[in-house]
Image 1: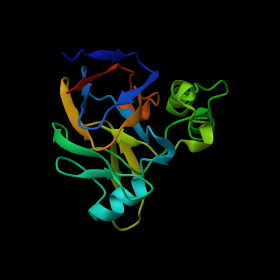
Image 2: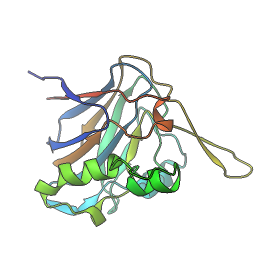
Image 3: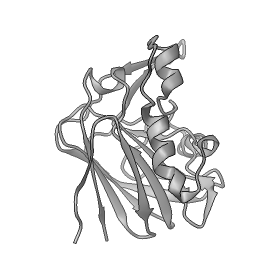
Image 4: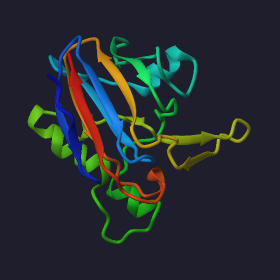
Length: 196
């Protein structure tokens, strides 16, 4: 029996996802990003890799049927269903430095990076081990001529979900993103549940 959990706005969590189980991430209100990390539960030095996942897929936008690979070229998760179809695997989790450098905040929020670091610390995962996240529902536009990146509001509507099936025992880090621009101008919760 699965139970749906809520991540409050601008916060994060970490949990175990066993091989064969499915993680369902839901945007309950629409236009809210969730940063997702995965680590091999048996060796946390093996971690989700945007570079390898995009390289092997030969495309920037991953969706149903696409695997998410580790830094060791092993499949960690398979995307088995996807209501939104637009996610980002280029931009790093927002941090105090993100808000200081990009937005000029003098007293910045710790962001997804800080939230992930705090949630993953009990699993022996340190800040320098945090890679680029799979940014669920994040809508990053890429200009094919200039390479310019632009962050637009997510295309996710209220109730949209993505389901990812674990191909190994994992430690998952997951946030309700803290960057205003990424979330259509407001901060909202994210929901998640494990099935199987």
